[in-house]
Amino acid sequence: MRDVGLLGHARRYLTASRLELRMASRAATSKSLSAIEIERLTVDLAAGRKPRVWFTTDAVGIDVGRSGTLVAIADHVEPDFLRVKPSVCTDVLAFSPSELTLTRPAERRVSAPHPTDPAGDRACGSAPGSARRSG
Image (cartoon, rainbow, N blue to C red):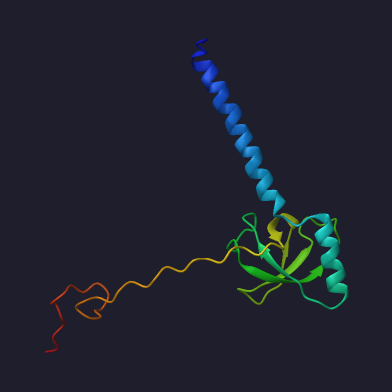
């Protein structure tokens, strides 16, 4: 077996890292809106429908997985030509295709509520047995 030394290991590590980055970026961009999906959304808007879209990790200021309603499509020469009303506000904002997807995210799991405190409900920050006395 040949000893490749530190340089050989570094080369292999960098090659693997580049491959992982390419795969990750491909996965991130595969969720973005494609040209075909944008055409379909244009047809939906022309028919009077308001399609639902979801925000990707590229969307700034909006949580990933939040939804919004597509209300208009502007001229494609603008970088952010998709007009969306996010479900969290009343404004219509401009987004690029990379910031939106038609793929609904998986449901978030809600953790079970913590069991109630055996001493009963206490005010935030109060220690057991240190009830306030009015006096």
